[in-house]
Image (cartoon, rainbow, N blue to C red; front, side, top):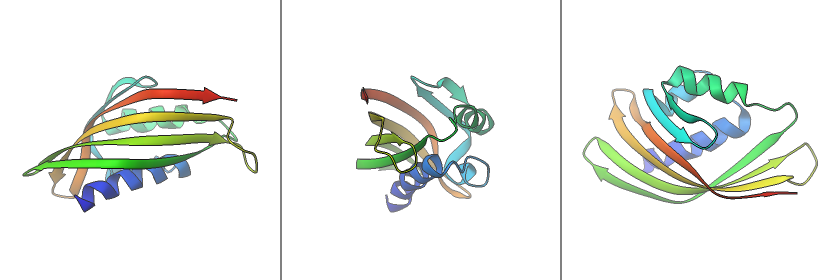
Length: 130
């Protein structure tokens, strides 16, 4: 459970620090990852996910992801997870101009390299723009 919880912390840092390239993304996601979200639609494969993240980068806008209430249900080498994420969008030295609440649901599997997120659903719960 601790290794899987670490994946969520690494994911938040990856997004906030814009470290999308491998090996950072490959340390979190399986090569054949499938992600569904309002922003991405449905993306399959680590390369496509990384390309989408790069493309969505807005110059000068930063994020701070706070992940909470993580639950992990283990079944051998597979797990199902759920968590909430609060995301602040801001520019240097300024308060957030947008805040979002997300629901995260991921499947994870143990690989020879360790646990990796293999399938995910990101759902927008709410959004506030100033």
